[in-house]
Amino acid sequence: MAKSAPLNDEDREQLIAFLDGELDEKAARLWEARLQRDPHARAEAEALSRTWQLLDYLPQPEPSATFSSRTLDRVSVLRPVQAKPRTARRWPPWLLGGGWAAGVVIAALLGFAMVNRPSPAPSEPVAEADPADLEQRLVRDLRIIENLRLYEHVDDIKFLRELANDPDLFGDEMSP
Image (tube, rainbow, N blue to C red):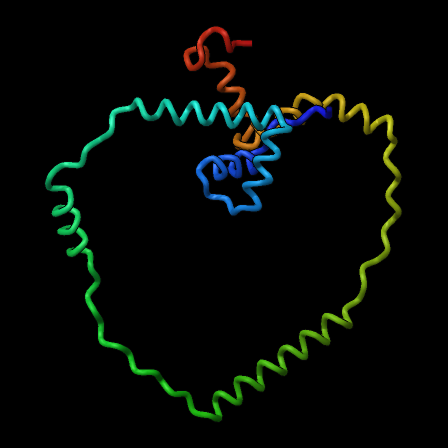
């Protein structure tokens, strides 16, 4: 049996939609089949289900008795004032025709200019990358490639270094 990969963000969104019953019948059948054969997906689905079950234990907030009336009062204040409908302005026919003719002429001139523009000078051929060099670069960057999903949410490396050097933020276990 082939080793399955962890779910990506798009798969996780579809799994949540499946658990909520928001997928169409065909997509739901595909997810049922995937959950039967993919242990990573099945574990993720079980974790999400357990999390949602824990949400039932949280206290349910009750709206105040005046909530509806206060909301309707605020909405009625925000209702825009009806303005008089504007009458459509008619353009003289000769102006409309002239505008169309000018647009066609400009489009034709731009098309002619783009077709007859000089082509760029030929560049030197690019040398083929050495497979050994490429493999060394991939091995060197393997940690980054494996954790790319986590790094996508960070704006710059300076931010990560500040997080790593702040012992008060995560405690002693995170310090390098």
